[in-house]
Image (cartoon, rainbow, N blue to C red; front, side, top):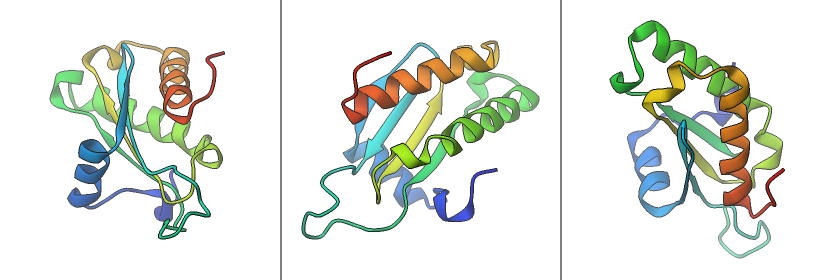
Length: 122
């Protein structure tokens, strides 16, 4: 489970991350990242990184959508320490995510986060 202080809950936070953040798309998901600048810069938020998930009906029936959300929450939880403080992350699952295995979701998420955070792909 994702700790409460790391969850995106408000519509405004989702909108801010999607509209003003950077985006990296992969075959199974799209990751939006807002923030992540210099933590010592003036006016930078010192709150913990927060993540939210968008899994629409296009992904599949409720059972498949919930499975995808659980997998994504688990993957993000393990990567919270890599995210800059004050950042907002929205992970939007694409229709193929329901049929994909855990490893493919992990690889796509790592590639997208690596691109957004400026790391070389593995």
